[in-house]
Length: 272
Image (cartoon, rainbow, N blue to C red; front, side, top):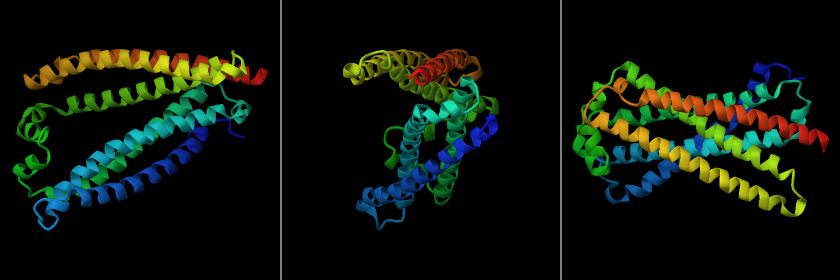
């Protein structure tokens, strides 16, 4: 019988890790195949193929992370929908935090694998000039390579950026999980005939509200960070502190609402 937080967390992590390894292997294979296709014009020129491969793998890493987040939320929702979860002698808050923690740890593990992969593919690029990069990254490559702003950041600044990314991931997971739980909970109060319609309407409404709110928030923060980046100001003097505070408040609110929703959902399941 699973009665401890750590035991349940480990059981969920084993499921997440299987998913991560599957996505990771598919990503590598797809990245290599796409890279071979994209560099077909200059496949016999050993000056370019390493850069092509690295750029393709980089994009596949981003897509792989997005796919993992989607599957992770779907896995959590599938677990919550199972009636066996009602049999676990653990508070609703711990159940919800277990899903969130396992998803976040899995995400960090996935990022760790992606980082190792990119470092491996970066080794052949050590002796490449910036001109080679500019050919393959015409829009962002020249600016990033010619800019010295990244070198002006200290360790604390990079740590803040990493923490901000973690907070954003928690926000995305929390709001998506909340949407899935809410649509299930609300649909239980309506007749079977309009149950699916209610789920779709609820989902679309919550997605639009979440997208608008988060988009406006990110636009404001990105404007502040962009100005500081261009002006070469230290991130400690930018709006990143406001971003921390705002995202933390958002995350706590959504986790609290999600826990309350989940408790109501389980009560409805018990009554049925």
